[in-house]
Image (cartoon, rainbow, N blue to C red; front, side, top):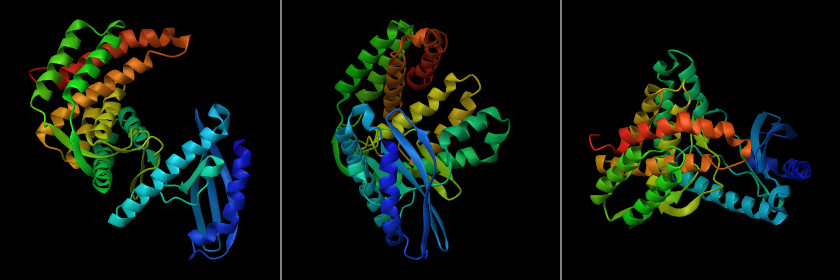
Length: 339
């Protein structure tokens, strides 16, 4: 159980914490001060008290009850290795924004790291949407700018040789996704706009594009914004190599998808996307490829969102009335011939 794992972690830290913080003086206590349950893991907040101050840690404990103890250990080991690699790469380049790993608890199905204080970028976006004038104070644009810089730094640290860009496979994926959404209301006009716009864009795309490590879960929920910058702490789905633009496209899709909430309008999401792209720094041709990849992510989100428990009558109605209209608007903005 997760509680037993935390007992092991607390015991271990009581004997090893001073090696990570040698200038903090005598260790006073290691405390667990709260936890957040997730679908396949728990996040425990911890405080390590020293003679001259305290440090905050986060312990991610995978649920062994979901997939078995060995699977939990495997997931923790993979994430621990990913986190260590990225932290070392950032440290070497003197970049910030990756929490330092503390110990190796993968045999217990856990990953422990320093906790970066802050709030998710998505919460800041929602605050900007709900509070008149909040988005005008520059905080939202600054957070998006820092996010663009962070992703560019991550990709510089993990850059690899360019890899072939398979435009035919991408078009096939788009066609399949459009078909999966057709039955729930995505009309022929929107599908034609998406496919024709993507085909035109990809006809002039480069044969090879930059590659790097890919997070596969770079979302506004996983971007933590604090007073000293931003941090990403979830590296569970990271792969060592892939198309650089995948993470940027998925991030932009997640931002745009917030428009499905009636209070989160285009002026908010557009501001975030523009600030992010300016900081991320890609050419006009590469932005066109990003638009195609963003549409693929949007279609994938909506196709996936339609599956699930049959509590789903309300969700199906929401798809028909909200999602259909949203994705049609997104297609017109991103891939219409006049754009």
